[in-house]
Amino acid sequence: MIKDKIYLFDTTLRDGAQTQGVDFSLDDKFKLAKALDDLGLDYIEGGWPEANPLDTKFFNNPPKFKQSKFTAFGMTKKTGRSVDNDPGISALLNTKVSSICLVGKTWDFHVDVALGIKNSDNLENIKESTKYFVKNKKELMFDAEHFFDGYKNNKEYALSCIKSAYDEGARWVVLCDTNGGTLPNEIGDIIQDVIKYIPGKNLGIHAHNDTENAVANSLTAILAGVRHLQGTINGLGERCGNANLMSIIPTLALKNKFNKNFEISIKEEKIKQVTNLSRLLDELLNRKPNRHLPYVGGSAFSHKGGLHVSAVQKDPKTYEHVEPNLVGNQRNIVVSDQSGKSNIVSRLKSIGIDFKQDDPKIKKLLEEVKDREFIGYSYDGADASFELLARRLMGEIPRYISITEYDVSVKKDSSGKIISSAKAQLEVDGEKILCEGEGNGPVNALDNAIRENVDKLAKYSKYLKDLKLVDYKVRILNTGTEAVTRVSIESTDSKGKNWFTIGVSTNIIDASFKALVDSLDYKLFKDNAPASL
Ligand SMILES: [Zn+2]
Image (tube, rainbow, N blue to C red; front, side, top):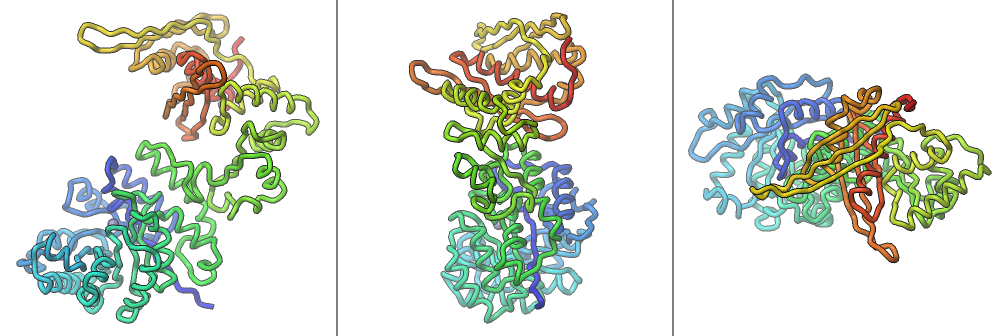
């Protein structure tokens, strides 16, 4: 059976870049473009040349792709100007790319209110602009902005807009749900009608996520006949985001309904890269990855609760819809109070700790976890602290750096500035090392005292140089008689692997300190640092 091809178009670098708080550097754009090309997207939209200096620079010296087509974005010509006298159009034509994605209005309301021109002028702009690029041998995609709202408001006009682009030779007519308010059933119905005028092999979908249906709408559009799909990494995009390619790609590749009937350019062995690509975007944006993202999130294959865990151990299919390694993710067994021995056993296994099934230490560890959970510890997310707890119990963690004393103070000076300073007395190989630091808050000061004096830490300096605190969270818990503080810390290093540690105490500084010490110990342990003498 010949399968229809679905063409995938990434717009992270253009539509995604329009998100509040997102500011890609040129280097970020190169990194993401390279990763998308390596994954095997058909089209990568780089941005809007001449709209801002960064995009101009990007297009002047575009990345070299192995398989993706680099695409430039722009707008149909302005009313009252001829195509060859429109600076926006010339900027697009002058780029070195062969594919152009041109956005134009298809909702009469927008033509009237946003552009303030006549419907016929807008039609003319679409027609002339398309004709111009096609004549100049560019592959043209027409992004029909607000198409679904336009169709609902004035079907005849919306259709005439997209038909004029198609008739003038647009390779793709991309139906955009720009406001993101269209529901899957409407997408299906409308596309079934549009297909009477434009064949599905020339139609695309660009969905926004304002009703959380961007992925569903994209998949529905494919089933209704379109063969081109636009989206972004992690669904990045303004307001509620765009269609998430990190969910769509695995679905197209792994779900029967799609992989039996359609093919994509992304090779089977490349599907595994989606998890890394998802994390790469977060890293470039300096954001904490969303653990609950389908397929690629840290919790997507996490199992908690004794019953679930023992079933997963018998056969992962009991609680997993696909195998985590198919998307480059991994199974994660979460330890919690409600879980039993089976959780601990399987979590130890995944860490790679050797033990015998009847080893009394397993029972001891379970009791220790339960005791600690009772006073407020939670090892759900704190993998590193759990591993340290287990390995300490097994006698596998040597003493690295001892912290013998610390002193934290907070003061407000006459200008009203609040300064926290910390001193910590450390000991390595019997030698005392005094570390001092300041910070915005006692915990930050304590952290700085250790990390800013890392050069003094003798043989441990080189191991701790690239250690970085990524995130820090404090929760006040009430456990029985007194309030305790739970501090969780996320750390990372130059290898890019993040680890989570926790500390619990009635005192916030002490809780923070415990979490910090675990973070240091974990880093030293995983990098095979020698023990302190
Ligand atoms: Zn958009």
